[in-house]
Image (spheres, rainbow, N blue to C red):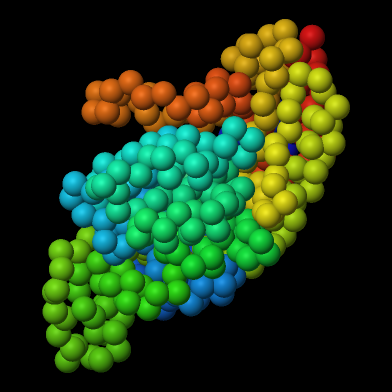
Length: 389
Ligand SMILES: *Cc1c(COP(=O)(O)O)cnc(C)c1O
C-alpha cells in the first residue's frame, strides 16, 4: 500500500519505514563492472569518488575510508590529538563521534546544545575548555550545519584544532558554502542512514595537503606508497612506514556505488527539501508539535526530520511513537545524550546538560527519505493527528 516506486522491496511492504536507501540498477551495474574488472579493493574508483565528493563540497582533497568513525579518528590524530588530551564535543550525538575521540586516546568533554538547532552551543563549548583541551569537534547534526564561524573564532582564540563531523550533512550549507568545504577537516559517513550510501564508508574532506597525504598513508597500514601506485610502477617501488597505520580502506566496489550516488545527490537533496516543506506546513498547524528550526545562516540537508512534542500534548512522546507504530509508521526517539550512557556515567560521573536532556525526551524522528511518496507523507501526518487526540 505504501510502497515507493523507486525500489519496492518486501521488507518495507505495508508500512512507512523511517528511512530507506535510494539504490537501483545503476548501482548494481557499477558494482558488477568493478567486480568483473579484477581490481576490487582501493584503487581508481576510490580516487574518482574522492574527487567527486571533494569537488561537490568545495574542498581540495578527499580521503575515503571504511566509515565516518575512522575518518574522525584520523582527523583527530592528524590535528594533533593524542593520549590524555580533551576534546570538547556535544553529548547529543551518535556514540560513534565519541568512540573516535576515544580511539585517538583522548577524553570527550561533553558540552550542551542549542535547544532550537540541536547543534553544539558555542558558549557551552567554550565553557567546557580545560587546560588539556586540544580540539573542538563540531557535529553538524541530522543535516543542519552548526554555527561554524562561532567555533572557528573560539578555536582560534584558545589555540585549538577544529574538526567537523558532517556524517549526515553532505549537501547542507553554512553561509552559502557546503559543509566539508568550510576549512576544517570534515568527516562524512556513507552508511545507509546518511545522505548517500556505499553500504559502509566514510571520507575526510580538507584543504590541507599534508593532512590528506598522511591520512592516505594511515588508512592503508601506514605505507608511504599505495597498492595502486606500486601496481602502476610494476613492482619496483618499495613502501616505507613512518607511523603505525590502520586498515581503514574503502573498496572500489563501494566507491563505484558512491559515484552513482553522487550523480543522484542533487535530486535526493531536492526530494528531501520538498518532503521537509510538506511536513513543515502540515506540522506547523498542529498545536502540540513543533517543526524543526533552521537558522538564517544554514540550509538543511534534511537527512532526518526531528519534531518536538510540546508541553500541551495530552500524550507522551513514547505513547505517540507507539500509536504511530500501530498505524504502520516507523518513527524513532530523538538523540539520546552520551553523558548518560553507562560507559560515560561510570567514567565521568553524573553530568548535567539540560538542553541535551530535555531534547532527548521531547523529540522524535519522522520518516523522510528519497522515494517517499506524498501519499505516505499524508499518512504520516494523518496518523500524527489521530494519535494526538
Ligand atoms: C552516523 C554517524 C557517525 C558514524 O558514521 P559511521 O560511518 O557509521 O562510522 C558519526 N557521527 C554522526 C553524527 C553520525 O550521524
